[in-house]
Length: 104
Ligand code: TYC
Image (tube, rainbow, N blue to C red; front, side, top):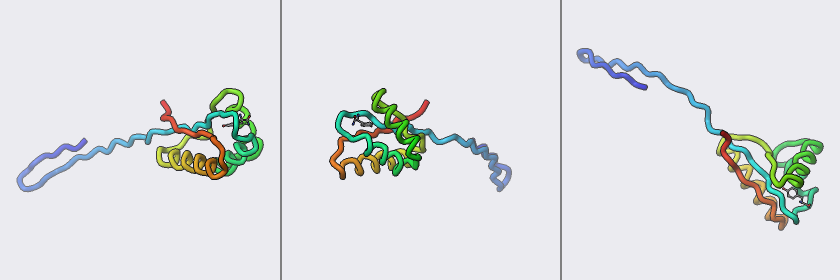
C-alpha cells in the first residue's frame, strides 16, 4: 500500500510492503502397470534425493494407492522436477506419469 502526500514541492511516500508466501506445489507420481518398480525407486533417489529406504516406501505407496507425493516445492522447482522425471522415463521407454498440483 502506498500513500502519497504532496507538501509544497516534496512528495512523501509511506510504503508498507506485504510479504506473501509463494504458492507451493506437490509433485505427484501416478501408478501404471508397466514401469518397473526398480526404475521408480531409482527416479525417486535421483530426482528427489531420497535414500533407498524412503524411495521404496513412496514407490510402494504409489503402487498400492495409485498416487503418491514426491515432495512439495515452489512452482518453478516443481515444474522442473516434473520435466526431469517425465524426460528420464521417456528416455528409458517407460510410461511413468508425474504431475504437479497446487497445495491448499
Ligand atoms: N505398478 C508398477 C509395477 O507393478 C510399479 C510402479 C510404481 C509404477 C509406481 C509407477 O509411479 C509408479 N511394475
